[in-house]
Length: 253
Ligand SMILES: [Zn+2]
Picture 1: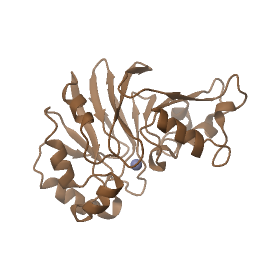
Picture 2: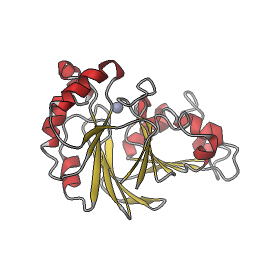
Picture 3: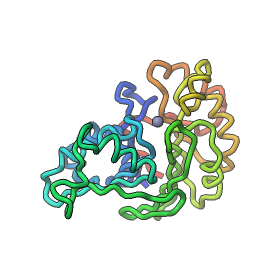
């Protein structure tokens, strides 16, 4: 599996911190930074986007991805998420106020945008990739995703504080290659992390005790202002193969 990091806090371009990953060149995992990171030709190949939650740093390039490609021949975008997240995007994003409702454009019969509800934990298949949404613990309804192709599986937690079900499913995933999770705030801002449903390095240390598999763990999410401190505190966890993702890089699993 190829995962290209289109956007991540805590990377080498911390001011471009919206979260988004491109899987095998065609399926986006979250969409905080798709239109900004990909050329128009690359954007045309993205027909399927999986969304973890409604926060703007995971969704804000969706309007421009559609707008940039609206008149391309045969263009269609399918967005997959749990029902609460789809509902939020209908009500607050594609609501004809924030952005046009592209689920009715150019007409009701053949719209360019399809919003597809996926039940939590039920596998669904997109372009040769099998995904499962797994609920995590953020301040709005949020899921991580288990992402599998014929070469293996990776688990992406999305934004979360301490959580259980995600780790249960990760621990019993065959052919698991890696986990991608977050660390947003330094230990000094634990209260803020708690109320906002995020992790600090010390929370991460406790969460990683729930991970029973010997796989590399990749991190995103470190707020740019606290990046150096978060990196130092993550090092004190003394866990091997605990790696900050680099924006723009492609990882092969
Ligand atoms: Zn969030």
